[in-house]
Image (cartoon, rainbow, N blue to C red; front, side, top):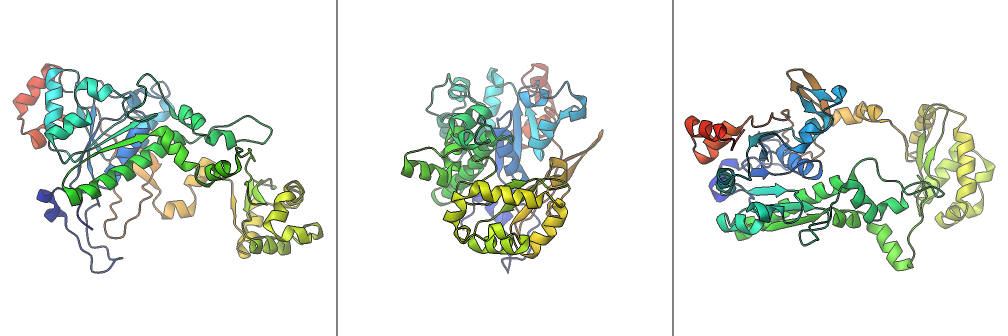
Length: 422
């Protein structure tokens, strides 16, 4: 595959393992790429953090006073270490920070010079903001034809700039809330902010695609990511079912539109998930439970079980309540019936499989240690599993201006005195 790195840096980062599984390159996959991160809150910072985890030199460009995420949870000491909030710890590791006043003439000039050295520029401003600031994709591309720009917005770069979108807005408009919740209840949002996080992951995919295209053409391009688009895409087969049938799917709680039994059941300890998808799973479950009322010939097929959802779920609920979740897991696992506990968050973070995959990592801080989720992208030849804590505002200002723009200490000090940089 062609390198996504600039020609001047590609040779320095060449690792060709003799075997697909050989670990021969000590660097991370995106080492050598420079990302200017103009993002704030959740969607943008999560996207740029993924790029940083994979090795991109990610420079967080924020106002001298810091971006808004730094002030979230400021009044809740339990979620603060060294003045860094849980939001920042979870979203800004492995990044550098340059405090820069983009609204000042000198600040804008510095940013445009930095953009000439960058591979990727990411923002999640409202539509029209980058144009007003003078850092829109067309302006940046005119100065650096190789740059890949990415904007994450609520409804797309060509949308009404007056519309404001947050995660809940995207979830509600995207249709997913309408099928989330109990059948006789109200629509429920996903507690995990999938509107934000879905857009972030599509942004990473789009940026990588644009870098791959640049490796062939030599030219960058703009990546336009809308939170609403992401939610529509994630509807997948349920959207297709609705379009085919002409009716929106109904809410089924923790159940499934097409599979029975499929849901959560109370046990003597904690809730248990049973997910029967194939007729083979069903037969194994019937044998394990040994209940004659589940041996109905009609239940042998998925269609028959779907019609008898209430009766099957009631029978299953009755028998599973008689023992512990742990006992049932051992029995169901032995028959290879898909089952799992409903973990609370701490139980999930302490799961042996999660820990074995390095999916909980510690950030070392002066005031203590912060545990955060790890990087789920596991690469065989460029693993890169080190994690640095988020930077203080402007912690890397001097180094970035020196290394990228050649400014000396006196020049940076003058800019700081003028309030242009932090």
